[in-house]
Image 1 (cartoon, rainbow, N blue to C red):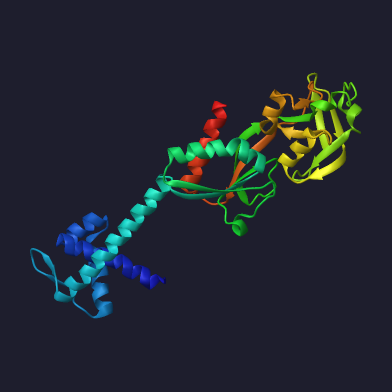
Image 2 (cartoon, rainbow, N blue to C red):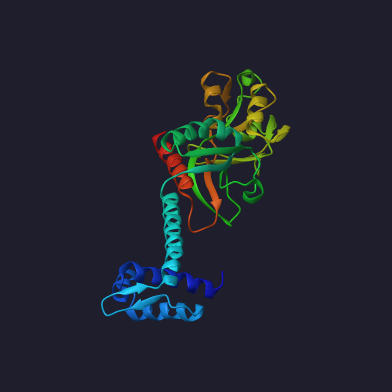
Length: 301
């Protein structure tokens, strides 16, 4: 649409207001502009199309036959435009439509599935389409609007908001109690078989801190590699080695004794989860509502 088209569309509203109010003065008051502007723009509309649209008397302005026909079309255009703006405004305020997102598989199963159930119950006009994968998906290529990602965010072209924080634990299968040395420090188990998670940017090098603030950095030797956290967990449970896993994915295994925590007196840096979205001034209501719900649930946990 060029500038002339835009100007003509504005003149439609000026012309329609004059017809509806029967007065240039009242039309100007309704539009919040001066009477001179309304008069000039309507006159320009008549001049451009070489058609008299209005007849003026001392008491009232009346449309000509051409003006009345033209007004009928203008009124339809203006009404549809107002309805379009109303729909857009409603869409911006009320969550609706399909939320297309991606998340790590383990976090999606453990944390997001219950959150999605609560979200759909709260906003029945919404649907959710989730791609669960430990790989980082591109927004455009994968047709997604929201990504839940863990760890340090490297892409500065996107906006992000931290939605969760979790513990990372060094664990082993319960059958490993006899295999592990009675270690007092991380470096003493550096050569134990380690199950590496290649979905992480750094899967073998870990920094431990004890209650006194002492730190030790250990680079483990991998016995096997997997590119998914749930596969790493099953490998550890099967006795393939030790590994670092997020607390939300192993809480049940720790509770039932399937896994044990190794070096419980030493802690690892906490992990973080972020909601990531393409940069932009405005985000759809469905995205804002879902992120707010995740934050709400995290506070209640």
